[in-house]
Length: 634
Image (cartoon, rainbow, N blue to C red; front, top):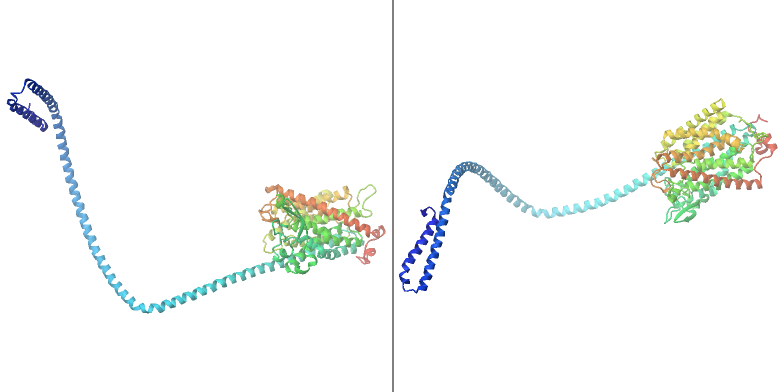
């Protein structure tokens, strides 16, 4: 075999031959070896020969693989040639890019040399500037002192400016608050004057709807109720109604309604509410500050509140003079009027407007915002209406009103134009009554209140006229007038809380209620009401607060009676407000009815409540007043 093809095979053969030669050279040396030793060496040679055969076999096997290795080598040589060509192309491309980079580098080097030159120039200039600064350094000390002094002066000026700004803002706030207070006081006073003029309207309505022989007596009651009830309100009525309105401090506030628009002294002085505590909740009953407007009460805001609330009270006190006209003894009227201003009206007024327990039903029991009555459907008109019901029932009907079988007779008034003129005056007065109850001209809700008031009066008058026209065949003037007044009474409670459509609707309902209510009280309850005061003020005072509980739209009254959120009625999601209104109205009937009965009963026992039959038939002008209302009337 040709072993020279593989280096490893050649080396193995050489080692084998060398081993054989060495063995041959060694044989003479072994001639004298013993047989045993010879045999051992012979075995060794045979072993070596076997291994040589194995080596030759391996060489033969590897020789068979040499052609395959040669093919692989040729293939590798071809790939190497291809790679060499690719390498040459890559080298050419790289040389080109290297040349481009070298050109770019040369350009950058040129730019760097230019920048270095510019930097060197700047360093030279900087050195010159430093030299100049060194020369000016001696002058910087005084300049620094001046700067420090200027900074100190600026700081002092800034402090003065801050102080001046704070003082200016405080003065501005004081002027703003003072201006707002002055405007609110002026607004409340002017609207109070308008409400006071309603007394003339009541006098004309009641006198026009009664007979001429009682004109002077009826006018005199409307005239004197203003003064007599005012004195009762001055003595203690105002203190009872509003004496606790500012009592809202401490762990358990005693009031949920504070009059803030007329200045801080209102709450500071009128701060004593009497009542009781149950389960950590206070139930106010009576105010206890502001008697006789004395001492610390000498404040413009408090006096303004007194004037405005006094004319409201007087409206309530006037209502019974219509229902009890033509038979009420003047002395009894005078005594009763004092107690209306001093006690009956103020107690219920405290419960609703003075922060008392009815106002607190929202905070204490979760019933809406408590009993809400914006301008007096219940506080003023229902109070007057309940007094009219009880008084008229106690004093009895006029002579000739009912036949023996109980059927009523119509007793027409003597001057319908006078009554209609009085109705117009009352309608005008309501523009003071309702918007004025904001006690603040800064409350822009007054525009909504005034418009709703006007719309409700129209709805009431038109509805009453239509129902009378349908039922009686003529558009009766007295029913139309009372329909307007009924709409005004009904809108008094909800005027700030309802939409225009609701104002018209509830006014129209009021006009219809007034019509049917007249016949109910006259025919069913046998109560003689010459002017329809009960139907106007009681029936629609009740309807007014109920309508608030139904139609209040949730756009006004946030925080009313200490309850967060705006006043919302049944159809807008708060049925509890309707419950509060109903409770307040029923409470009014109980309190006013009971207190009126007790006071009139006592007066009746002392001086009598009704004139004699002879005087009533003849007319009360001469027997009671000593003068005729009309000089040509006998």
